[in-house]
Image 1 (tube, rainbow, N blue to C red):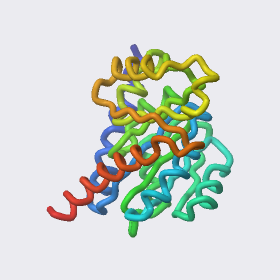
Image 2 (cartoon, helix red, strand yellow; image 1 turned 120 degrees about the horizontal axis):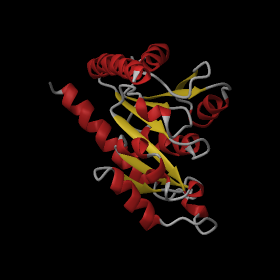
Image 3 (tube, one colour; image 1 turned 180 degrees about the vertical axis):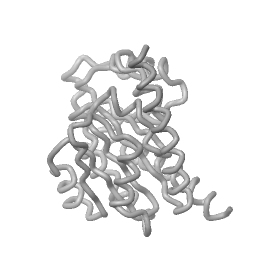
Image 4 (spheres, rainbow, N blue to C red; image 1 turned 90 degrees about the vertical axis):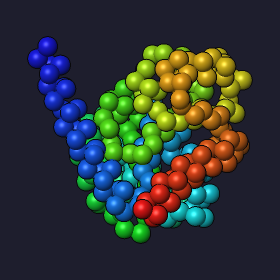
Length: 225
């Protein structure tokens, strides 16, 4: 019981800070996407496909969160040329809202319309901490199996959208798209689901359009207040 109370206190303080992040981003007219998945699900590769499409109409910034290394930040900077910073979490397996706020301040929100946070690769801890984002975009890769929404419920419960990635290798793995959809919907009936292959550019346009519409809706609302 004592551990539970400590955890509740931490999450409560985190959620209060999340309100501050949303107020800041609302004031700036910035849309914030929290990208979460297990390690190796294809977050960086998917971003490298989405950014050039979205950059036609949005000024984009990227926060790369890792325990160590700046490999992903280098990849995004090299392949897209957008503003990017690397955040090291000091061993933590997730981004808290305080870390999120500090990262946003380090990146700088002026002159940006759309920011992606590539969270730590982990299907457990990142889902527990609200980062202040407008959208939680969760990736489920084919090699992981279609049962992951059943084993890691909270991650899929907090998702606004789920992108099933690496569809090009589905014949190699025991993965049922129908079961994946059924299991996701069991956890979250409102989640938008996209089937994608970054290697073949399949489904990227549909996901890009969804993000574009959601971001545009918020930005338009703020600009017309």
